[in-house]
Image (cartoon, rainbow, N blue to C red; front, side, top):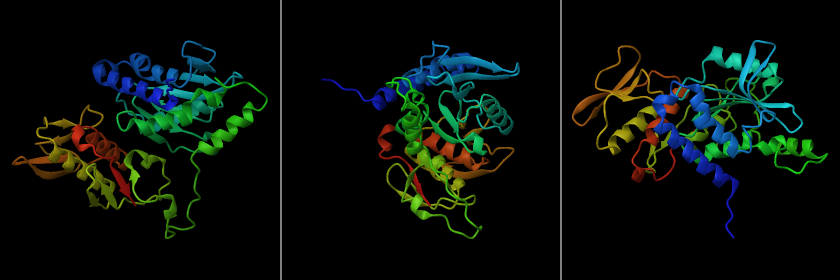
Length: 325
């Protein structure tokens, strides 16, 4: 008897979504409706949401005449449960004004969990009633297994009652499961000199999991493990991007220059010309001086490091890149 796990089934769908994003990128970068149809709807269906059932997944939901969200997902009682905002592929998902507006919309619907996605990158905001505005982020462009686990944890329709045997214990069951799987907030230190609880950061942490950790405001990575197992000493998020870039260039026989960064719109991550604005790091590459653009915030430096690692030849992807603190 052949048995397929739900995680394996979702993984296959995510592979197809990633392939579709690469194949139709020029269209999806300028067409939000196409992005939703090709990249977001298949994921929702794989997680048990019937996108054709408007009582379950209501598109373009408005309230009060001026509040509108792309998807309002309801539980089996009809109560609003999740909000999803869609943007075109590769669009910025973390602009402060836009995020604040979306979270405000969600609170207008009395929803506590919000996703903002371009179909590949997913930003999850939870516990909004407690004032939380920190996102858990993951991407289908990186390691698919952590992304699949996050999606099951936060978006599986079973947590809204679908596919479960209905009983009076349903609400308490969902609450219990959510409490078990939800990340636990850590208490802030009493002073700036108080050290973080190192027991929460054992050894190396997969780069794709960094955004799920509760780091101190000024906490920096100390070591980077490259995909071939080599460990590099580092002192900043910038060092992660530089080491990732240099490793990629060393392992790649030829790289078309200028090499665009992850958004792929205006900025070249690698170029033979130094950027007119922002900081760049010069290195020697095939007898020439090459500039690595580094003028990003920590989150973007991490995203671009993961991006170049994803472009490595398959033979070099022996293990997932990771950091230690």
